[in-house]
Length: 203
Image (cartoon, rainbow, N blue to C red; front, side, top):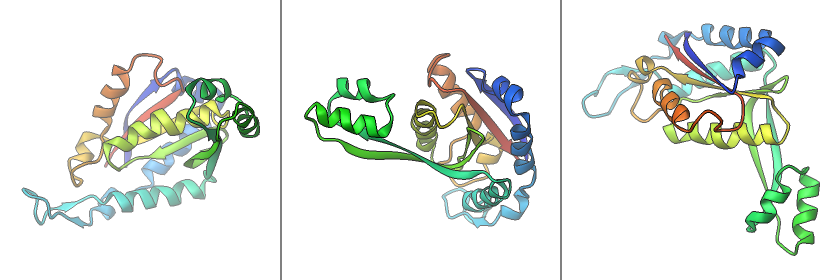
């Protein structure tokens, strides 16, 4: 496979090229290591495509997971405490988890432990490979990457998506680069407030 397009949000690409260009090379290597045709194994049951061979999102995800883990990209979690009081959340959001809980309970509120998990982190850069439903991309960009950035676990998030030319040969539902690029730009230049690289791939 190959990287067809990428979009740099809040100078994400420029930051990576300055601080960790080798990581961008690794992302390219991982994408190029995937034999797309080997994953064209799903027999469609959808109306209008019955019997057609489609790319399997699960298989492509699994291959990318292996390739990233071989290069020592590892799963990481960030934990935090939440409560029902919006003002209290704003006040505690940038504290450590221990400080958050203490402050919430000192205010007389109940604190609930929560977390976000991302599959691949290396040198404060997170990668999400998203061949799932379009709603998962918004969660990655506006929750996962942002939570890790606010929690001072990463400096950059990379989101890998199929280009339309690949997505059109998958079962219906997965997000695609062009559509998610539109959604990201529509939010405005500073939203979400985390440097990102949106990456579109195809066979």
